[in-house]
Image 1 (cartoon, rainbow, N blue to C red):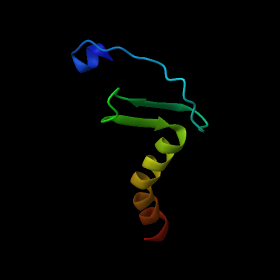
Image 2: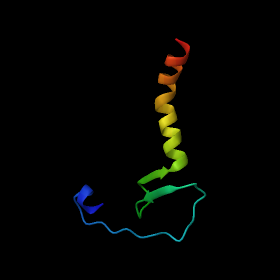
Image 3: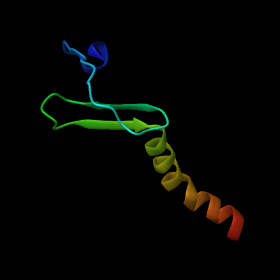
Length: 60
């Protein structure tokens, strides 16, 4: 993470648990930045991206 951001970074594992089939949620200590990369979020993002293409293939 540090090399990608170009700055010294410390990761701390939270004691909180999430309801997810897999993946990770990463959040800055101040809560301003949050990345949800849980399996359900990845599937939701890909569905939004792919659904118009699939519809065009099936129904055009």
